[in-house]
Length: 333
Image 1 (cartoon, helix red, strand yellow):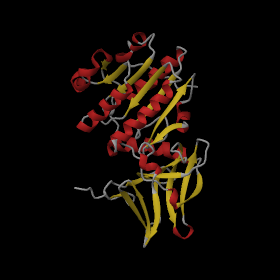
Image 2 (cartoon, rainbow, N blue to C red; image 1 turned 60 degrees about the horizontal axis):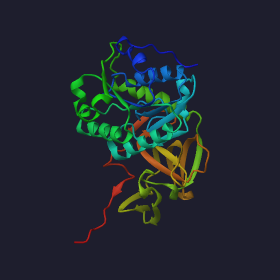
Image 3 (cartoon, helix red, strand yellow; image 1 turned 90 degrees about the vertical axis):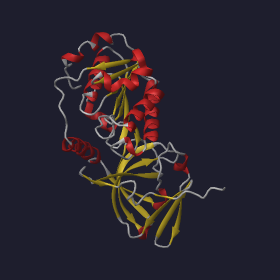
């Protein structure tokens, strides 16, 4: 049975205001304003009214649809246990708990999911991440709103915060007050939420082995995903694609980083932990969960280090990651 949520008094008017709504709603706000609570209330409301509801969760750090480090989506036709949405087969791997690493790819992945669920939904609800009060945050939100083109954007906070969006959204922007029940979540609470999700997800995992050549170092939204080539060199192996090179040293064995499991044509099949490089066998060891049928042909490492219990062990920064060494070809004069 679906968990029963109660409307905060500040938002009760939405039940009547959205009585006959069909289309797409995007929820935006800084962290700890109640975006996900708002989306879950809307999910309940529209399902109760017999609507087919598409839920697109684009918060890779505090997700409810799909595991952390991914964007997830689901089309709901009736009462559902929110916990079951963790294993949705409709997700996009990003590899990080914040979109700051690559907001262009992040926006593209979000749009991919919206396109998928819109075709089968009466109402599409898009939850967003808390990256907001920065030029990068405003740019990401603007880019997503532009490409998704929703009928309504629900913003939680003060009108002044959303002035950049009001200039082009006009009457499509509805600013809601922050409910009195909302409380701020510290870093440890957020990390604990991810730990529980990771732990539950990987509790059904198993050991998988793939040739080292199965590694990729870009997401499927980039052409380079399909072009990585491996070459054995002194001291390790070299991967190259479109002006980029990645060198894996034979001194690297223990990895422990979250990774995406992909088909040959770039479809997400599951999530795993890239644990070890078995140099003598020419293989990599992945502890993974495959929730979409198909043959896994490619492994894309993310940046979040995590173990099988769901505990985060740090991250590879862009500058110190052993996976990404950029080399751009010399341009002619």
